[in-house]
Image (cartoon, rainbow, N blue to C red; front, side, top):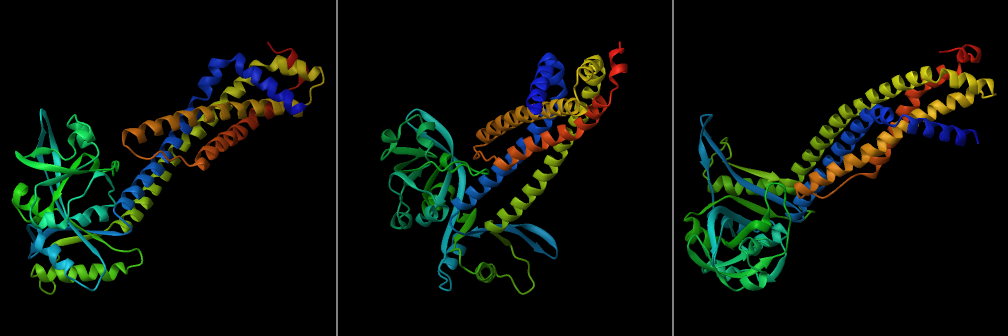
Length: 402
């Protein structure tokens, strides 16, 4: 009964001074919103990264060209070429999938619509390594690659960018850099990977891209798909040996390529994201402490303003415990109200941020409950002193207070 009466009295007091109560909790609102948004963004970023890695297949290594050095001086980039990928594919020590690729922007036209499209030269195996799924039609074949056929597979958004439906553009001819290519397939929507969006790209056979579009055998990268139980270190050592031999790199010479293990990169990224999130959340959490100090200050002012009321209640038989409980509950309710509003604002900001960046919405429930609980604890801690001060007022002195 005592608790119920204290809650009712606290709510009545908060409503009576609505504007002041809101301004008092503003720091709590901002702090909680910042904590929720930062933690949510960190979680969404990690989820997006995991999706990106998953899209590269069970386990994917990527080989990129790197700077070559002579005498410690950089002499430019030594390119990866198609023959490098062929040398890797001939190795029988590993059951791996070699997926070389090249890319570049070219004008794409269909009837009266023009776009500047990202053209990717792929082998059929690239779609398997990347985890791309076919939505309509078919993928091009290795036979079409060897024959340099003018066929193309479109990302899911390309038909819309060309102002046509899937049905209208499938099996039709489009112009890429002025040359006609037949649309044989359209991929399912894959979503943005953070650093690229495969839904906006076009895919042609690798040798077709090399000879008919780009006029070069230089590759942008080579993906190597391996199973999860493969000894990655041994695979990377084999790749290094083959490419060093192909590039005539002698003993002690620096590699002119680099090999990325995306799963290791993801682990490092998660660790960095976690540290950054914890740091920013900690800084934002300081505003909750500042908000608690503000609540304590307002509660002290409230005690002074309500001195006669407190004296009257004591004269009518109210105990120190009931007076103290009322003010503690009032402080806790103020902070919890600020925490709830902050959670709503922070979650809304996260949703907008995730939608804008095409990231998954990921908000740990523990962060929500933790923020509200911490807000309540802040109210409890900073409400004790004003409540104690109110409870210890002398009723005789309080009734004479002007």
